Structures are given as C-alpha cells and as structure tokens.
Length: 255
Ligand SMILES: [Zn+2]
Image: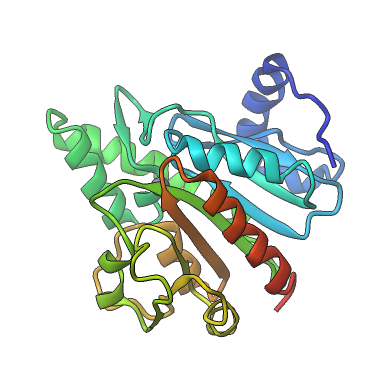
C-alpha cells in the first residue's frame, strides 16, 4: 500500500513541533509525528494505518538498504524510520556521532570522542546530556511492543561480515560461508530457530559476551525485544530483498 505524500514543509512544521511535544504526545492520541529526532539528526516516519512490523534504516549512507526498505513499504503493513542524513553519522552540536552507538551512555561517549577528537570534556558532556534526554523516547517509539518485531536494514563493506560477529554470538548457522557479508543477526531465540532453517547465514545475540557498544541490537536484547539486523554488501539489493521476503514469509508478526 502506498503512503500519502509527505512534503518537506510537513516535516518542518510538524517535525519540529513533534520533538518539542514528545513528552506529552500521549495526551493527543490522534496526533502522529512524521519524524523523530536523534541527536540533531532526523528520521522520517513512514507509517501504515495498522502496522504489524517496525523497520529502521539507521545509517543514512547505506543506499541499497534505503532503496530496498522504501520499496518494501509500498506493499507491506508496517512503520519505518529512515535516517534523513546522507552520511553514516548524524549531526550533533558542531560535530557528529554514529546513530547506532548512542543507545548506551558509554557507547555514545566512545563514538563522540572518536568522531570529534577536537572536542573538550564539556562539549562531550553537553552532547551526552542531549542524548540522555532523547534516548528513551526514541527507543520507546522505534522498538515495537507486545511481541512484534523490529527489522534493521544495513549494508556493509569489505571490513565487516558475519565473521566479525560469530565469536560474541550465542548460536550461529552459516549456510553460506562463501557469502559472509549477507546475514541475519537476531536477539530472540524463537526467531533464531526459524531463521536457522533458511538458506542464509544467521547468528543469535541474546547474551553478548562483549562490552555494551551502544548499538540498537544490544538495547533490544537487554529489553527482551525481538530484533533482526539484515546485513548485505552495499549494492546487493536483490539479495537483501530476497532475504527480507524470506523473513516476511516465515517470522510471525507476534511471538
Ligand atoms: Zn549500518
């Protein structure tokens, strides 16, 4: 089903109001935000009337994942959050931060220091305070409730693959070791059991044996939320679409 066209003006008018009203928005059940703020970055919200799944494109420069998810939303009932940034990182104050490292304070601090080496301690603290104020609202909006699933679409390059994850995973099923860049990473054991019957690579990270890096998958696992990362190499849209279709056809809407 297609979405009504949202103009840039809609985003500006309702989006800025939305971020201001976020703490009291539950008082107005008829009001639906069209974007969500994280740091100084914006996420466009594409929403069906009765969404059955949640989806996110968190890294704005992963253009294959953006293309696949945008097309997918034309025919699937869900709510999608798409980074409006064209870069991997999102702006914060005069600097930048990796949006997939801000979901714990320690992960955010490490990403802020790495990406803004000229910042003094005060600037880092101010940025951490902003993220502290936004984190819960963002997570409560993006993570589904009542046993539904959040699917995060990512693209990778030569330096990252399923082989980067196997050592810290609970379980793994590598049906395509010759295609290590294409894999599912999930947090729910029930979803893992199903995904492991697919012809694709999959790892389960319910209890991660590594420091909390502030990623969305780590936060989802800690909250016992169902979450699946779908990774393929940048440019491999047919494979990402195929794997997403497999997921849609096999994973239940509600666990
Ligand atoms: Zn990514």
